[in-house]
Length: 115
Length: 111
Image (tube, rainbow over all chains, first blue to last red; front, side, top):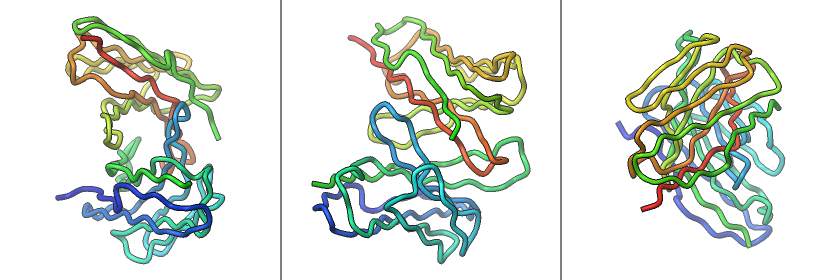
């Protein structure tokens, strides 16, 4: 199992350009998440999905859109990139098992720079 | 969202030293989690705590769920070079659908 994979690993965009980050998981997990990580701020939730065809806003959703057309894939889109979106983006997935907590498994991250 | 504050923000220690860090919240959590992020990687779950007062170990790591349910502590004994990284506390909210993360403690080992 590859677990959670993200493409691309690095990207440089110019202000106003668009791009899509792809997250894929092979663990048949129901839940998927997109976070951004900025220095001194931990990880902040952008959007998440509780199943195929569903999406929901997280803590910092502005400027981003997401889609979950297939259970194993979760796409994060930036329609018009801004320098404030320079960050490291992490995807995660988890399976609802009815436990006190469902562990989230993280991908390796995508480092995005917007100039 | 709920805020989790971690301290210290960074630590510079020598190999073999013990490490202590903590996480505090303005809200009560029913579960506390500790993640570690190696350089250039995504976070990985180290320890999960489910009950106030609980003390749980994972090798040289020991974590405690505070009695007030508003804090948690992580200790690392006899640090080794592979302990370098960022340690995050986290807690689930809105049921188990979402996690809120602390600001992180960056651990550096001085040769």
